[in-house]
Image (cartoon, rainbow over all chains, first blue to last red; front, side):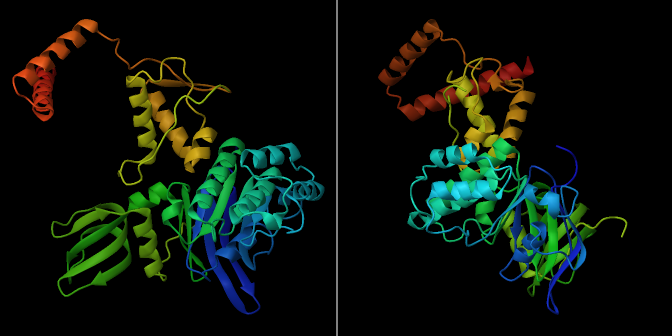
Length: 292
Length: 132
């Protein structure tokens, strides 16, 4: 694996007619990562995924997948599992695998069969007879069997019961471990991503608010609580603040120690950090390239 | 690849990082003799296929175990237990402890009293070792 990012988004924007769905977005996902694309509905998650898989071309800036635009000969390296998991309901699972093989030159038929057998998805059944979890497993299996290196999933866990959610994630994580895949998956349920994802792209109002390694991000953020009307000494960016008559609470990205005896600092969970950003949609702290 | 020897389980409320929970469970299994030198740890794919966690978390746990000298990766084969943490059984010590517990019970001590005594003996012994 080389150092080229699996996905690199540089100042990218996307327009539907005269309305910008995304503007000036920056994000970079290294190879082998499992990246969470998080944000409120309508924030631009689906638009960013469309850019990543080459369904749309950026109207400004640039999107690269393994160093190349997601077009032409580079396209087989990317697979997209849309939220409604579009499969032909009247085809059997076995026929669906054959159709996948017909459409994708590098398709791994044996691997797909083995994977679905391991997952207990009956190959003779028609797609419409499968449970939601089994349909998700078939869709993910097709993406993996395509031998894509970047798999993009739009809300893979939506409309699944808790057991199916767990099983779908187990299947996806096994594929990551076996194939060294890079995954970009969108969700608005942050709690269930904490064990799975190691990279975060947070989108709000058509902008990437913050992006990077989850552990680094979480350890760089603090909740600062102190007397109202004061600001703590130190080097930090304020993401959000709330004030009462007596005290001020700041969500801050710290760049060094905050030394102020009147202020207490607290570490944050991933969920708290994400919520803090979502409450302050105007705060944008995405990493930008130095030369721009 | 051989049978899976141990399975990990996660306590999401423990506050202990997931990779550290895996480290601790391997160490515990080694202490109890459930994992002995030459045993293969489950592959990252096997672990994440049951726990639905990021494979990098498993690899990080195995790197930590490697840096503690407990396991070693063999390329293409897996990660193997390098040494034993289990103590060989000592029948004489065990008999003397059993006899002592019988005496303590006969003297009217309950399980909590006995545990408290053992704990304080341990604390004293450890303090003695620390100054040595």
